[in-house]
Image: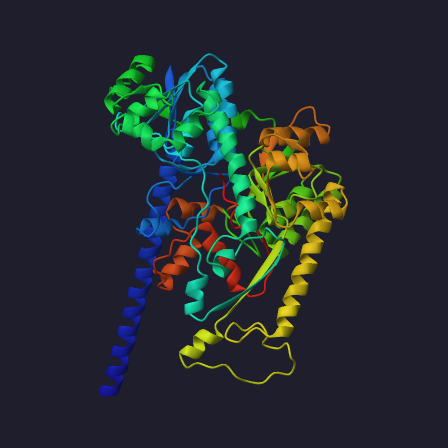
Length: 613
């Protein structure tokens, strides 16, 4: 009797617990559904920003101006582990906003607010300058304002009719430099042996891990490149500001004596030398802008930020596009070239090849422009992309490459098969060469009392184990593999450019060229921007009318919703796994080296010094 009562009691508790579980799951699902309803209501009930009449359009890029936004885990930002604020601004958003404002009579003027701009490069600023010139040609004014101006901020500011700066501000004109730390001494003390195999005299990636100073070849090539780009920079500044050709150079070289003459007042010095038009406090700038465009109902300057402006005007001109028109597709290859699938902001061999394959089979895509903004990376991934481009060309559709700030090494590898290559005069390209690296920690481990030993069936088995010394056999294997890949790289360029391999060899050796130099040497067909390349693709496809279509990785509805909720599948998995470790911020070359060393012996067509200038 007692046992039966206990059995009934257990069943009752089991039933009760099942009810609690069902209720818990039901409530969780209900909360989730309510959350979805709130999110969808919020998304679809948002009112579009209004464009006031006679407004100032504020172009205020924040962070780096890029060809493609990098993937950032929203959950990292949500929990304070990401960088605050926007760290990147899409170049085509800036271009599109100014271009549309040119034909929008509601926009009375443009204000360039540069304080949050972290970097853009001379090539991207030139793209923006072309649109600003078109806007100014309509008779409307462009004014640049800032507390102070870094070198790149100032280059953008020179595209304005007037430049206003805070009285305590300064204009940084210091020129370009390439200094870095060299770690050969540290690696020697740590007993780490780094074996680097390079094909190309000027291939300087990994050099800072091998040496204690800059090599003569790197000093020569880098010096020439910096002087070429600085010359272009000063020409733009002096032309825009109507100054003598030597004005910027003299200001940079004599800044100490100039400031001494002005008792340290950098603002007064910049004004006297003609680099700015007025010194104005924030209140004075606010007042001056109100006099030009008036104030809104809240008493603020009658203005609209470019992000809100795009949100307001994009639906109208997107719907106005004739969908039946043939399209010139544009695919962006921005960042390091890496093997496999990669997120936005890097170039995955498989990811990009899939986009190219899609364009090849899309009947609406009549031609393709590949926009390259990359210092290169994996030679294998570069070849996977090139093969996809050859398959695209086999369809009979034209292929045009447009080079951004950088299209070097692997970036040039994937550009080689194009029908036409377009570059800006200041694009950094070339760097035709190959390198690989193998780190050996055998001596370092030995100092700790750790020794590697074992048996193998062949001489080469275990040859690329970083805990062992690199054998003479494997050294020879890597040297031969590098030499072959370099030879193949030159053959690819020769085939694509229709020039003898011997001529390519003269231009190779890892040497970096500006776009202007590359055009003179036959590595580039024409100088121009992305719009010029798109027009060229349309011409090759014999299109009288066309639309531009950006071809990007599609995101599922679920992924878009999670992104709006500041959640991604990756971030959710990381949370479940407890992956809350803080990341280590590394500069681009260091990240590139870390990537390369994950696969000892892998071959890289990489220009680590090719950063946008």
